[in-house]
Length: 488
Image 1: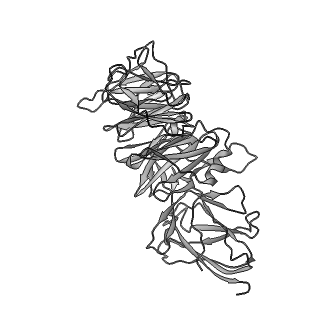
Image 2: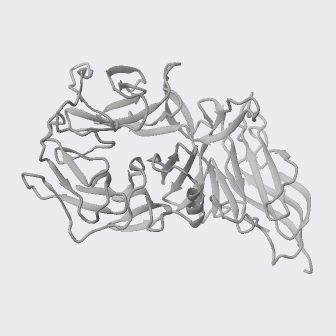
Image 3: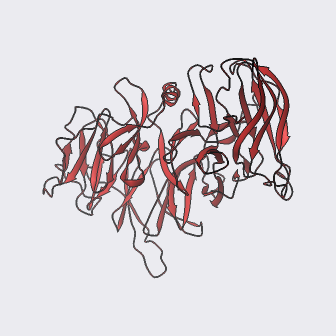
């Protein structure tokens, strides 16, 4: 009999209803395959540009037109395709969110407290000019985010309904009258994003869509008949998805955190009830940040809650959630050596044919790498807890359980030469667990190696948990079991 071992993260408020997890995997669907659903390992991180020992955080990455900026601690860098860096200027802050946008000749950088401009020019040696300065215009009120559209830098004024614009192609020049107010509801503006030549204005409870009317005073005006009833709970959670969609973390009218996507102008909630329950436990969500990247046909919305030390990933293709995390060393000697923390990436950009991410805990910049099964040589813990398995709550005996993994994935030598997987089961609805039972999945070249556990006993309800950390390609294809059901 087929055992439903593959699935997404769906932990209900009652573990006796559902307690599924899916850690450092993502769901893959293949209706013509051996099993219709499989779990693939999330990619590893390969060092692209090393930080110094004193650096603490890559705060932002931004690339456009074969150029790439990185903000690390309080320094703006030019990042080259070789991974080398050139310092361009110094910010007045060392922590917190940063946003960068460019207009073709200038980059505008904001950090919530100050604004800066880097004027870049390209010579024959492809080196940028190092002209970095603060924005000192008396009418400039430093924002937390900035956007660019139709020649203008646009940004919200914090704790207000105002949206400001710079002069055309001039981020240093702001007029005292160059603002307009969101008017759909009296809620404050949080952030802006440009999509399909429209400016989306996200407020705390609603979102508006603006367009360029060509008006000389303030070119952008609201589409009067359009108001989205989902606001934004975290300014850095807003991302442009595929096909022009926008995804962001919102709060509904009941005060619950939900992830929302647009299809055209129609909002669609992506959060399952389990995810709403999970995020409802978080004390802080306004510091959440997100980015989107693609692997093959899978497009992932990666949402991190820094204060809560959690990263949740939504796969747009399979419409499923999973948890991604990195193995973090504990500082307290009274605890275990490591724990599963948030995924290391703090920000993302596509540059030089690579998908790059910045480390939230160092100055390192990594490449997302499907051929690497570690995070910069640190092992990755992968775990799957299944849904409940039962047959009309009759006593079910399992003579053997066999899990089908991709075989012959062991390394030639060293760590991962003989990869092993751990199994535990619960017979009391997920409250307590059996001892760990380890099995090898075979060495390199051992194709068709069977991973099997015999004589597991009897129960009315079964839940299985598998865990692995060897640095190999872990693909969970499916599972079968030989079972006997009482009275049949």
